[in-house]
Length: 419
Figure 1 (tube, rainbow, N blue to C red):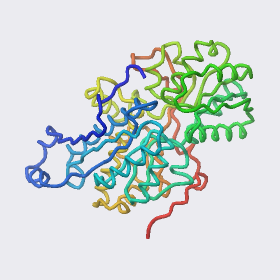
Figure 2 (figure 1 turned 60 degrees about the horizontal axis):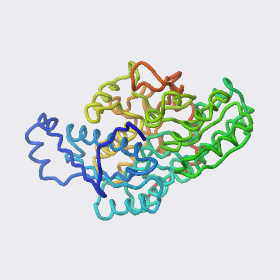
Figure 3 (figure 1 turned 30 degrees about the vertical axis):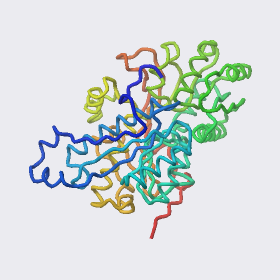
Figure 4 (figure 1 turned 180 degrees about the vertical axis):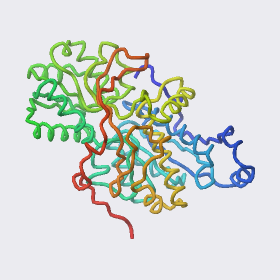
C-alpha cells in the first residue's frame, strides 16, 4: 500500500526496549536507581507486519511504541520499565498467529498479549490467552464475537464491533441514496459480521439486498464481482473489506466507471487505504474510527505531533488503536497494583480512559462485563483534497458509541470470571 508510514524493516523477531532517557531524567534519582535493577514488564505484540494488513499492522505497532515510550517516561509499569516484544503474525494464517502467541507467552514470559488486526486471528489468539490466563488487548480486530458470543474475562478490545460500524452508517445511506444494495464482502470473520450487521439494518429500515459476493482475502482482481454487481442496478454498492482488498476494489470500481452510475460506500475506511488510492478513487461514505483532525479535543494535537516526529506522517486510527492498547496494559496494572491477570482485568473492567489516551469527544470506556471500548465514531465521506494533504476524510457527524453499541445482552457476551 503506497506511501505508508512504518517503523522500518523487521526481522523474524524484533524486540523494542525503550529507555525514554529524556523523560527518565526528570524522575527522582531514588526511582531511577531502584528501577534499573528491576526486570522489565513485557508486552507482546502479535500482529501482521507482512501481507494484506501489513500497513495497518505497522501503524498499530507505531502507536504501541509511542505508548511504551510515554509509559516509561512517566515511571513505567509498577515502577519497572516496559518492554515491547514483537512478532509478525502474518495477515491471514491463524496457525502462525497462535504459534507466535504461545511463543510470546511460554518462552518470552510476556505479561500482556496484544493483537490482532485480522479478526479471525484475534479470535484464535483469544483462545490461547484465555487458556494461559494472560491479559489480552485486541487493538484492531473488529468481528463481534471477540466481545460478544465468545467473550472472555481476560480479553479487551479497542476498535469498534462490526455491528457498531454498520449501525452508525446504514440508515443514513438508505435515507440519502436509496434502499437497494449490493455487497462485496471479505470472506472471513470481519466481513461476515459486517454483512450480518447490514442485513439487520436492511430488515429494520425496509431496505433490499440485491446480492452478495464473498471474496477471498488477498483478492487482486475484482472485475467479475463488479460486473455482477453493476448488472443488478443497485442504489448503493457496499464494500465490506479493508486493507489492500478495499484499496484494489475501489481502484477497479472507478476504472470501470461505476462511481458515475452507483453510489459507492461501505462500513469503515482507514487512512492507510485512502493514502493508497488515486485522488479520483477517494470517494464514498464511510465510518472512520478515529481521525487526526479533531478541533477542540484535548491532547489530539500533541499526539499527532508526537507521531509525526517519529514517522514523518500523521497518525491513523490504527496508530491510535495500538497506542490505546499498550496504554491499557499500564493503566490496568497500575490501578490493580499487580501484574496478576485477574486483578488487572477487574481494574480495567468499566475503566474510563484518561483524556491524553482517549483522544475523543466522548470519553472512551471499557464497558463492564463485556470489555468493549465504547467511544466515538466519525461518519462522513472520503475526499480527494481537504484542508491539508493528509486530510482525506470529511467528518460529517460524530456518533456516540453508546448510541450504536446495543446492550451487553444483545452482544451475546456472557462474561464468566474465574473464582
